[in-house]
Image (cartoon, rainbow, N blue to C red; front, side, top):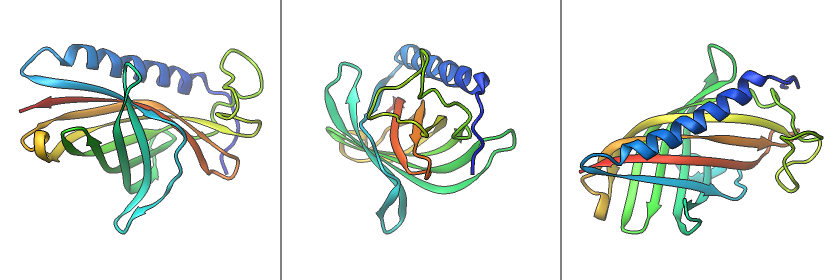
Length: 186
């Protein structure tokens, strides 16, 4: 379904987006709010998560590696992008110590298969992350915090994230490695 071709532009986009998210995360703590930087952990599967949610659930860890909750991603729309790749809209639900946070996001996903770094070279990912025939894609999303519970009941702010995905040849999601930056205000 997706042609396999090497596109350095997609790789550079992933690197630039990750650097942007980390820079924003480092600077966002200057103010009257909190900045949370969280990373997804482990492989995930796209599936029907609940009656009203098709997406995935991933464990989260802090930047020091401590497990700190989970994120559920619900995909509401998924369309072909205007400059290649795909665009999605959806919701993120963060289950964290002290309460939950919800956000609406727009995501930009490169065309899986535009980069195939799994056979040789400095970008090769080790098993079980990748095997021959797998496809690599990048994702960048941004959006607004729309609600919360308990400690986060009055929180507002933004969420952005960047990372990569690995798909099998059958387009079955194998791995989703994302860094989330939540810039929260009371």
